[in-house]
Length: 102
Image 1: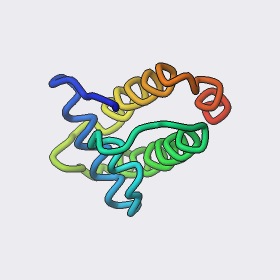
Image 2: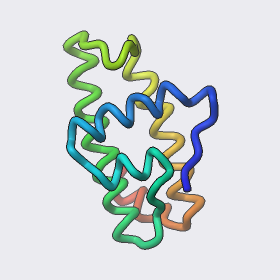
Image 3: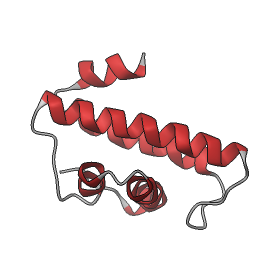
């Protein structure tokens, strides 16, 4: 299961906010360490969800919308990118992630 360090708490908060906004139960459970990546299908779902989150966070950032008290959503989205990419890679689905990142 994915684990966020204390230093990554803000990135997790951002992910929770957008998972709820997207009504994405699987991604929310993934971020809360209640669901794991056990197949390529799961990796695709997480990748899809992350990139949807990134689009929404970028739009909010450009519109100066503060999310959950987070002033720099762009910075924390990049942190979240690193956490999610690292975990998907650790699970052996880096090719899946790379196909979505390209």
